[in-house]
View 1 (cartoon, rainbow, N blue to C red):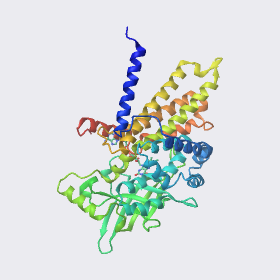
View 2: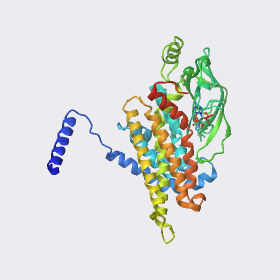
View 3: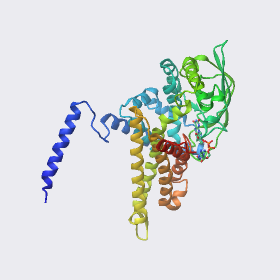
View 4: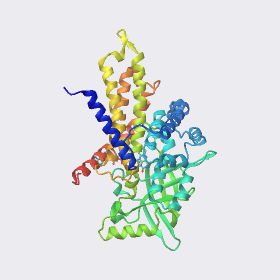
Length: 430
Ligand SMILES: Cc1cc2nc3c(=O)[nH]c(=O)nc-3n(C[C@H](O)[C@H](O)[C@H](O)COP(=O)(O)OP(=O)(O)OC[C@H]3O[C@@H](n4cnc5c(N)ncnc54)[C@H](O)[C@@H]3O)c2cc1C
């Protein structure tokens, strides 16, 4: 029989040798352990989520209003600020952004979205804007701790949800005035109408479908940009969602993200039948999918932890309910699914940050898995709490309502499967 202790020593020696060789070459070692900066940020956001967000969650869910005082608290500690978002994004591993989102949404998803909803518009400006546009508009999306502001990203329309090529909002260029004139109706916009800055996806050439789209910044108080109906929702009720009407809304030429020259070049390529880069709305969604997945993870983890504690306390038939395999196995599966989803989220976040192409739609995989896990875990949490789980006296019913949006927005589960199946097969699956 082989001497296993010798084999272990040899394996360890080999491992050490390999690690020092890769260190010498300047290659980072593979690790899933968060570094000290990441842990500090995680604990900082967790502290805010536990101390400020959780105690306010039920109230703002019932009020169905934007929790301005909580956003202001987040701004005061620097969490709601472009500096913090920049710091999260700058982490070369890509993990800080999902880690921070998971913690915040562990606190509460409705308030979490009220705080993070702005970042979708910021991502669009960051992804498509020139450095001057980023410098001008991104700070305005947040305002200051004394005067906090929000931003909205408006792609969806009543007849263009999953199918963004159906976008009818038009942007026409008025050359004499160097202005763009936008007309149309946007639907379901997070922070729509109450935002300082709206980023609007509009068609500059309808014949080109989604390849004729461009993104525009609508500056504060621009005439012709008005809030339409506010939506009453199943969950995420502390986050404001509304239609936005654009009625002869004129914005300076400089509000076209990326600039006119770049747009003209892109349109010319498309008209010549050449391949153009992906569409304006899709670019924003692709980049944000792992972060959205991390938000769903936060909800799932909160519900799992609550259900675990409850099952260890609640007694029926003379024993703790966790002592029944039916309950304990459910909890084991909840933990398993959450951890599996987190690995997909972290992988996609790392790939996105390090410029690895999503060859197999890894961004979609992460959002799809985390969203479905959140819905399933929160439903199981209600089951474990029994009648209490179904009441508004306990938070898991709210978590379940909140989780459901994660199989719908930023691409429904069906659309994510479409994206993955197209990526892996190379076929245009319909
Ligand atoms: C709370 C909330 C916040 C939102 N925030 C924003 C925001 O900030 N900005 C923004 O632009 N939008 C936002 N949205 C809109 C959201 O992105 C859309 O609701 C979503 O993309 C789905 O579009 P839809 O609702 O029109 O559904 P539809 O596209 O009509 O889909 C209906 C059903 O058909 C399925 N389906 C459609 N096409 C296919 C297909 N080819 N194959 C298989 N199944 C298909 C879908 O999966 C879904 O189950 C928000 C929505 C909500 C509810």
